[in-house]
Length: 528
Image (cartoon, rainbow, N blue to C red):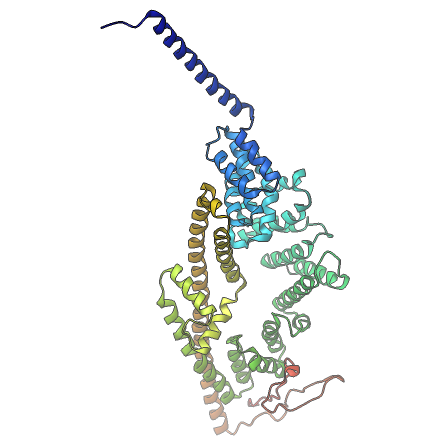
């Protein structure tokens, strides 16, 4: 066999050495880029596209960076994560953006964009409901982070949000932190009125009545001053909420006159007006002004409020009649409760047993909300009364947001939908939606279950009241047999009206302008 020339062998060896040298040099250069933070051409292109507001193109390049396909080092990959979160935010994929920012939050101070992310979390809190977990992510930051110059105008918003996080955790120590944060919101901030309301509610949770009232009074001052940073609707909403809370605080301290004063300041068009009527009924009862207590209960049973339920009001009516030894009327109130709510309680129990899986229960609740759950009219209205719960609405809003983003994804450029970033986004949103539906189903189930439990407990209370009524009736018969008479000095409670109102006998027909003004003539039939 003929050997190759020595010159040819030397040349091949030289080429091999040069190739090895070049490979080592390239690898060493890549390490140098990673160490000194020099961005790859891919990252530079991604940043340029972002700055040109070409969000879709930027996301494609950024995905290469965060996946390690661009040769960028760790710090530049972290920069890519931050810009990916921002790009998805600009594309209105807020849940998708939150997932990327969550990676930065989890890394903590070790991530070079950890501080800068806080401002974007504040922006997302406006777009996403609390049930997205946004507050928990903001809650990982220390209060000192709010002093970072990058926070800018979001500072007051973040004091409020961080305060809400500590409020949600509960416990005196966390409540104290929450109050401190709420009190740092500047008075000229649009978040001041919200912070004052939550400060007041936090004091209530700590049983600090005076401090709570002081916070709520600040809201009433805002209502008078009408500062320009607030929308009219926001002022009115927080005024009404503050008055309702003040009514509750004064009731809890047995200042019933003052409690009634604040309950009655809620306007008839308030979402909480019927709630204030019911709660004021108890204050009137505690003051033995039962003609007004019964009048409020009469209002609550008007056809205008057939979608709202205050079953306890029927038992309060029974207690009032019992107090006046009007046993037949008291028994009638108990019978009315049982006739109306016992079948409904059974219907709720059947509804809860229908779907054991929370995700399936969510699907059924969606049908109920659309009026297609196959429920009879009364059960439908009763279930709807709890499905309008604020927390539940937020839970359902998170599902709606995720579905909205999936719909948005399907409307994007077809070519972009085939990219890795779009595929990742699709998988993430689909998984989150499935989890959110299960959580929404659980919350809905808990609300309905709690309602069923409350109705059962009230039924038991009704049975106890009925036992007292039967005892009272027995005592009455005994007294009558002994010739004991009804007290002659007991007169019907006076009905006092002012110059702006007229006394008009109820003829069985409800008028809207009469709601809240009904009075009952009631006289004790108890023996001397």
